[in-house]
Image (cartoon, rainbow, N blue to C red; front, side, top):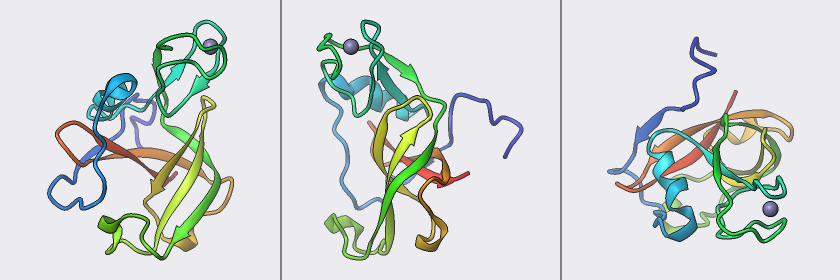
Length: 149
Ligand SMILES: [Zn+2]
C-alpha cells in the first residue's frame, strides 16, 4: 500500500529490451486500449446503451451490438477467478519464464481478462485480490500484469 493508492494510473516498467514474448499490435477497436497502457491506465469498454462492461476491446458491444462502446478507466484492481501455473511455455519467448502464472482476473468493474500474474506459483489462490502493473514491451503497448495486493 502506498500513499497514492487512489491514483488512477499504475507503474509502467520498461521491458522492451528483455521481452521475448509476443508483442501486441494496436489495431481497430483496441488502439485506444493500448495507448492508455503506455500511461499506466487499464481501460475497459462500458456500453452507454445497455451498461455491459467488456474487455478485451471489441468493435461492438457484446450485450446489445452497439457500435464502438466507449472506454472508461478501470481502477486496476480485481480478484483471481481462476489460474494456471505454466510449466511448459505457451509461447516460445516464455521459455525462460517457467513456471509462470496466468490468471483469469475479475476486475472490480466487471470484465474478466486473462493476464500474467507476477508472483511465485505458491503465492496465488482463487479469490486473492490483485492489482495491475504494466510492462512496456514495445513503443506501442504495455502489457497489463497483475501482482498480489
Ligand atoms: Zn450495449
